[in-house]
Image (cartoon, rainbow, N blue to C red; front, side):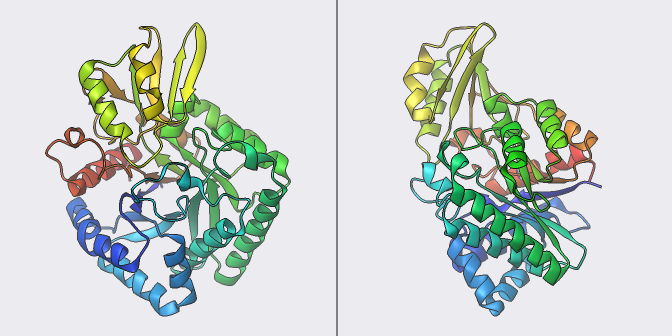
Amino acid sequence: MARLALCGNVFPADTWEQVHHSLQGPVRQWAQGLQGNVPPGFGLSLGANLAKDCLVNPHKGTALKTALDQSGVQVWTANAFPFGGFHSTLVKEKAFLPDWSHPERLAYTLQVAELVASWQEPGACVSVSTCPLGYGPVTRDSNEVIRHLERLAHGLSWIKTQTGVEVVVGFEPEPDGALESVTELCSWLAASGVSTQHIGVCWDLCHGEVVGESPAEAILAIQKNQIPVAKVQISSAITWQGPPSSADFAWLEGLARDRWFHQVRQRSADGPGRQWTDLGLALEDLKATSKEVQTWVHCHIPLYKKRFGESMKATPWVSAVGTALEAGLEDFEVETYTLSTLPPETLGADSVVLAMVKEYQSAEKELGC
């Protein structure tokens, strides 16, 4: 039976005040709006300092669990990709830092894993997602990364011994990350020599679309290398063919001004592809795109919307979810962290809370859960 969560990184989570405000406000409203008999899944998102504080001071961890329960949600997964400051004025490559060559990244990941495991009954299985080693290719060849992953494997085994809870940490491939695709990640893990009993992949559907990896290719890599899947993040990117219209270009200009990376890729059937590390760097080139070229932009677009502007479309995610279910994958998370920052016309009259409800219900319908 599939289970579904909505990732909490749509809200700031660096201080207790921020987390308490979101849990008692929009998160509770979202859970109530779903009107289900079972508390919906909620993906925990905590900055590193707060995660450490909740673990080192048990009363704060208890207070957090109480606040989650009062909001009407259940937590079986967490997002530990952003170390902190994910809703700062300018994030960009900082979302990948510190990377896995630094001990701080290891400590943070294990703290989040231990915290989530402490709330479960023995025999439960939970997951934590993390960055794809780092930003750019350098960390792929780092001896420090291997050492930290070996310590991660030992730490996760220790958590299972102490709590009876299995935690799988999933590395999340992303455009321009050290590992861009599920295929790259699975091959790298299989060759690394690190135990993958508790270490695997977080498969983000938006990222796969941008880098051109099909769902079938992702599943083949997972099965061939026998890599565990922490969770599938249900998400959708933006795509269109040819140059953007004037109206669409204005929308893209607005998107380019937000805090996150929006990596851009172009491909055509008979020509070499092009890529840009961020949308702002690609804007002028996009005007000169030929009619035969398809463009993809990394931006997590609402799942319940199919078209944007005059010619932009959301990349398909329903068929990928079906492929994942057919392969026996069970854990899914909606990750549309952009809801509060998308250009205003994107959500129309929908509030962020209503958009969260529609996001969850759209995924729930396809999963049959």
